[in-house]
Image (cartoon, rainbow, N blue to C red):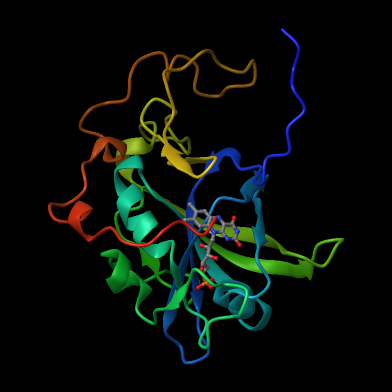
Length: 229
Ligand SMILES: Cc1cc2nc3c(=O)[nH]c(=O)nc-3n(C[C@H](O)[C@H](O)[C@H](O)COP(=O)(O)O)c2cc1C
């Protein structure tokens, strides 16, 4: 079959959602969902809108936490979607409203970090404390590209292989943002020849694992607003 040429307004082809905690001017925490995030070794590259509070914070205060929510936390992520920590709301964010207490609005709980000032998000199975080493505009000047060096990885023990340093691919499931809809992974298809955890994912995720945990009661009822991205 021949392909058709299309011009999709967005190209969000399915990347994991992260929740970025950063520090506001007054020392409080901001929290924002993002999916333009990918890792190169111990560096995570992030793509941000330039007018948001997260970009503003990282230009002045480079510490952050890259929290990876479980699939069951998607409604909390979506509750953050129509919010910005920027006051006044930047004019181009016509869909957004200001919220100072993002954790409270999302129904998420902060917990202290060890090496950086912004808090971690309790209940996220992976939390990466990091420092932005570069915060610069992209070639067209439309976005901000951040290179964040990871300083400490906190993992829920249920997604770690025994006494090793490895995340168990059979137990960890990311929340994936796929053309503005939330998904998670399907069953494993196979492993890379470079895997260091052979045979780990050749079975369905453990039902008792953190990634299978349902939302606390009542969270679904609080959903409001539309995704910004
Ligand atoms: C699932 C999801 C993924 C998003 N991904 C990004 C992203 O990669 N980059 C970005 O700048 N905004 C992204 N957004 C939009 C921001 O979350 C939104 O602009 C928010 O208002 C930023 O908050 P802040 O102004 O407090 O930083 C995403 C939103 C959602 C719900």
